View 1 (cartoon, rainbow, N blue to C red):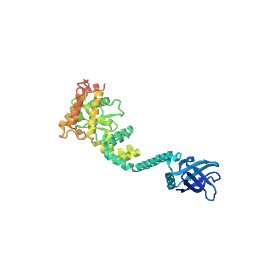
View 2: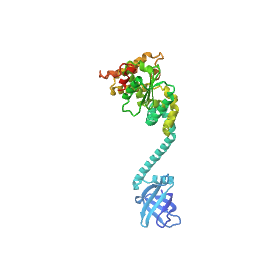
View 3: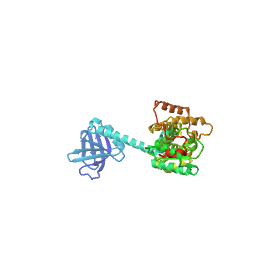
View 4: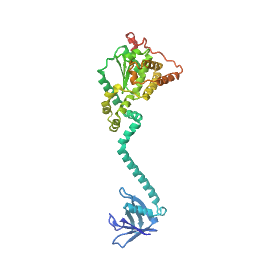
Length: 373
């Protein structure tokens, strides 16, 4: 059955813009029909060359070479173009199979493009949903995007705001002991650390993002050896190295953290909440276990006997519930954590460690010069 389709026809003797006519389809070929023109230009199916044309719509161009020159037929109406292709047996027209494969690829790309646009449009909602479903993992990933310099500025700015409420001891044997151990445990770190002693009888210590570590004199006095203080410091340092403080802030920000990442506004968004939260951070049990494990390994790398770490945590645990150890309110303790440390210690198979040359302990003025050597 013959079929006819509206077309724009280009060829010898026609204007450069072509002429509107029609294309008639026969079983063995096609014929271009020009109004008010006696010419009938025809081609067999095997003479045709096909390609897709049109702007955003799947039009079709048919081309062939006749005795009088080159002819082009554009069928731009999408419905006519689709109907025309459907009537041809693919094997009978050279290039039709390749054209159909190309069009399938184009349709896939268009669908992918629309999907990408939809994803971009929905990304804020998707990110918020993802945040709540994968809060820990996403917070860890977002924390890694915060530049070290911004994280350091955050910690230093927060500590400066807290400084007026703290009775700092930044000289003398107690401070020297803390700084000596801290420098040994942070050698080669990507952070520049500062260590502070606070004159406070409570057993407490904390770390701020970027490398600020603060320890109370009450905690230092409760240690029975330099190795026990080193265990506390190793734990706190690993909270910094693993960016637990920054992660906890991001989790607390919720959807604002997504905005922080989208805009790159790390410092202002975090700093706006830091002063309210950093002083009372409470890490998850997973974070505490990670700081235990990495802190234990840091002690071993530094050549410090890690036995002091579980030993002092056991001391703290005995005081739990008495209110004497605020350290435990922000560092949840458990028998499982202590057992894990003891297991790690047993795994060293009695490996020997040299004692830290910081006796007598706790530090006193009598060995200040020794500490500074």
